Image (cartoon, rainbow over all chains, first blue to last red; front, side):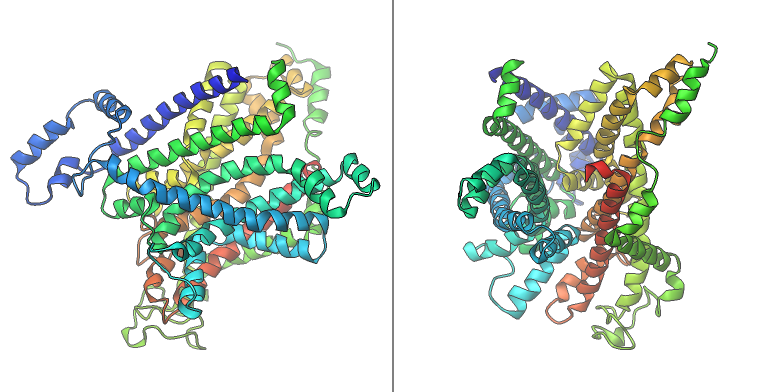
Length: 310
Length: 295
């Protein structure tokens, strides 16, 4: 077990290294002279040359990458072209908002998808099953930004129930979490239904019923508990989508998280901010997936056994 | 090396046994949802090709005397903030979305297939290098990879297609690699090797036909994803730029006017949803028809 975790940790270090190369390379080949961008239009040629030298922009690719990774390990992800401030501080202060939004969206997705998926499996091919499949299909097919706008039209402009933008209290989180959550729910719904259908076919379900266990307990204690394993895996993978969904949801609902920061930075051509934010999100995505994998081996005794035998 | 007749006979029969090709069309046609999806896609393709004939107005001519006109018999989907006919713009938008979908899937699918086959066929170090790159690309969540690629390349239709295409390479590479590894161990491949066929011939004649099904399934679902991602890029200002009639950028531009002109954002969104829905149904139908045991 410990060996497996160690192996996964090592491969994660390799992936981090690769992601840093990829992201640095993208920034390196982005057109435009950073020195000129930081100093603005009024800078003299002399000032620009001086800053180019200070930033080491005339060094080779390898040297520049070496400095980038060296600084990144010290927690320094560069300087914003627009504000001239260190990027790290800005993105770290916005990170909690994005994580909170991703967690709330996952919660919304779970609350919608698991009960609906379970009902869908119990009443296979009945009305509720068809209904939930239609919901699932629409959920994956609607562009998130469009769905967000429709939610605003309905709940903010027509019904005036919920605020459309900003973050001044809990009610500001509802529409953004549903925007991402509905999309996530569609995939989880599908997995829940399939996994429950599989589980319900097992002999131990029949045994439980034959022993006179109430149907509610058969479904929850016997079936759902076992059906949860693939659901948890997909939840982990989908969490990454929730993080990238923040790009759309945060910028529409004006939530001050990393997603909005990325979109604003793209508009201002502030590439160090874009790359550093993408880097941070990718790292958290990897860490979460690793955590899910490790959790998975704990919930699933079969995998634990396999690893033990190895 | 001289050909071994037995192996040759085996080749001809065996390469057809892997996927159950008989009755694919019948199985597909029985699936009403999938057929519905296909009909919608054919319809969209017709609209895209004949856009100039179908659109009642130009997609770019402004009529500032007639801005924010609600849907009417004159303007079925109303007009936007420049007085442009929303219906005509949605019709022309079908062109851009379908082209983006086809080309970015083409990029992802071809590069991914080559990478997947190379990794699986040559194995060991080649496999490790290719799969590490795939792992690295996949550790940046899908939309974000497309966002950072197109931020680096700059806005525009071509760059958006490349960004969406490149960010979908990993999924094709993974699927193809797994399928090739499955097929590779089968007898008819050994037979082909024994009969002296070179690797390229084996890949073209025996491997590719047998891994086509998973590629086709992924491509149709992938096109849905590509259209969604490209529309999202335009929405945040990275993809196709105004005044081009692109569904995502139409929604982005109409956002400011949702208070009193709901039609500007509603119809392009419905067009995206319908296309993506149809492609998803088509993909599901293809999966059920091509791979009945997966059901």
